[in-house]
Length: 84
Image (cartoon, rainbow, N blue to C red):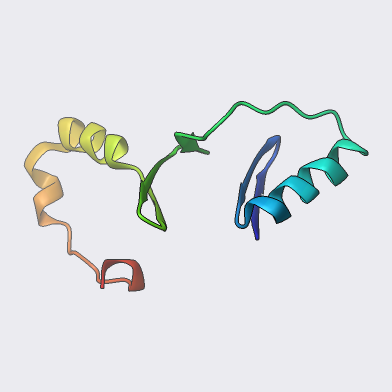
């Protein structure tokens, strides 16, 4: 199970049984509110494909393209483990 916590936003990824146990335990100590399946988390869009989850900021890239135009094409691309 993976728990992502940023100020008051929590995202839990993992086995449904483990997630349910965690939510029951955390409710004993804190007031919580569930808002359903997440579409975005701390400024990143969440995209699911099969059993994989991707976080991306394509809207931010589009905003930067509008602001800086062709200058963005001059930025050197860097390969990361996520792009392999």
